[in-house]
Image (cartoon, rainbow, N blue to C red; front, side, top):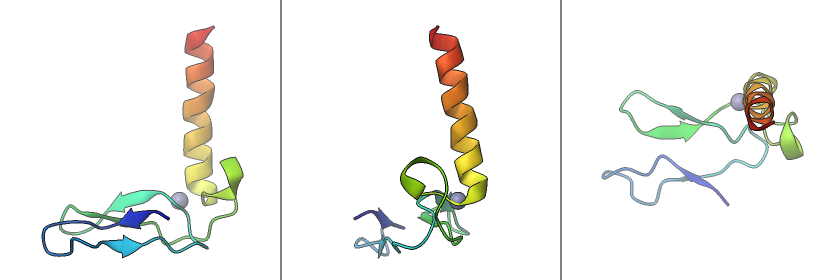
Length: 67
Ligand SMILES: [Zn+2]
C-alpha cells in the first residue's frame, strides 16, 4: 500500500485510497498527497484519465527513443 504526505509534521503519512488515482501531487506546503480523482485508466487501471494520458505519452516517447 502506498503512503502519501510524509513530512516532518506527519511521519506516518496518509495511506493510499484504493479507489483514487495513484499520482502524487504537491500540496500547499510542498509535501505530496494523493490525487483526488477516481482511478480506472492507464496501466492496471491505477490512474485517472488525465494522468493515464500523461504516462502513456511518456512511455511512447521512451519506446521511440530506444529503437
Ligand atoms: Zn491522476
